[in-house]
Length: 534
Image 1 (cartoon, rainbow, N blue to C red):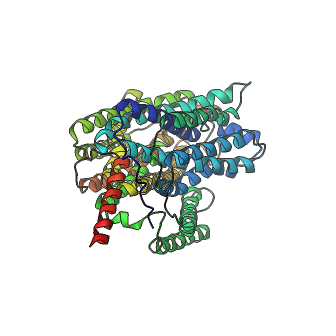
Image 2 (tube, rainbow, N blue to C red):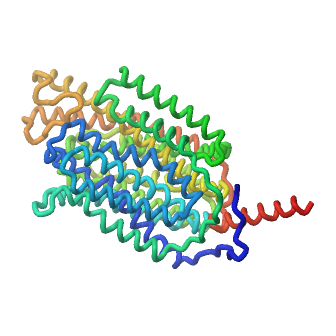
């Protein structure tokens, strides 16, 4: 049941570039917080786990907890943004992040640390979904492209700076690992203040809202079961095991039940009708494949830099700059051109082609690959991802009713995160198996008993303690295994290319989501009056 429009409510007007940039200041600070939360602990976790006296299993859960919570709650935040005040929801997600960060920083046991990471993940899920929803609400699709580059810069800075800042904090005696969590708090508080000051959104018309709590529970439970399976399979238990059967069976049953509930409720968390939209369906599939190919392949590059090329954690973080720079430049340039011309499909197709080529080139690396050649390959991959990833969201947002912007945007973010989780887990298992095989082969060829200094499957050797001949074998094993990951990821990128080819290009709308929502509400009111009058 929809509420009547307030008779004196003025229709939203288009925002100027200055107003948009002011509103985006808070969004950028919030996105930086979300990215920092996932990257700043990368180099600090070994120290954190050792200081808390926790196990390797706990190490996995500290990483997994935030990712699970973020991925599973993205659709919920997206649906809430279609029903409630978007600014208030953004500030609420930032508040949850602050609480989670403080709990993590003051943790004296791994149990509280894992719980705090869940709270952080819920907040990060809100930031991930809502930032793009708010952008679509205040910026017309035709003008949206040129602002995507700004978010690309924030993404690049957060991705590169996070591990470096984390390493410095851990190595600074008077700070320590707890500041890896505290450091995000000032940025989150700044984002809350900036949003309050700069983001002006019309009040949401009051209407009767029925939240689908059962559907939300079934979606979150089903997704968590599958994510736990792909995250732990191959490490904590075998892929073919009773744990796999239990988790996959439970996940599938819960999601089938969720579909049944969502199809019959008045306010579904994920409106199944949006998948009747060809553009939404194809961009969702492409986002899943991009997540598998991009995140699944590149997450192991840092390990390759450190183990196979013998670089320090700080240098390894800096070595990823060519890929981030390529992503930043391509997303900015493509966005500017799309905003000027209104033509966007060619950049989706070109991005998918270049991303496939970049993954293919990276599948040729080994322990002897020069950094110059490696930089070129990473830059090619970054250029492709930059043209593809953000413009998939633009294509979907342009082709759905304004009332479904939140749901459509969060669905794409959800499937991209899901693809990244699946890719990371599956390719991680492939990496462990291939490294063990290559090391055994190399040690046997050198006449060195295998199973000794080389380390076994699932463990990363301490390169500084290995004798010269064994060190060379380990470096070569990780070089070959990492190349295999990119070779496996390449077909996923090729499937993403085939998917975007079938997306139909439609003219970019020149009105923002808020303006379209007002137009749609006005059209519905006129229809109601016509029916009553007849």
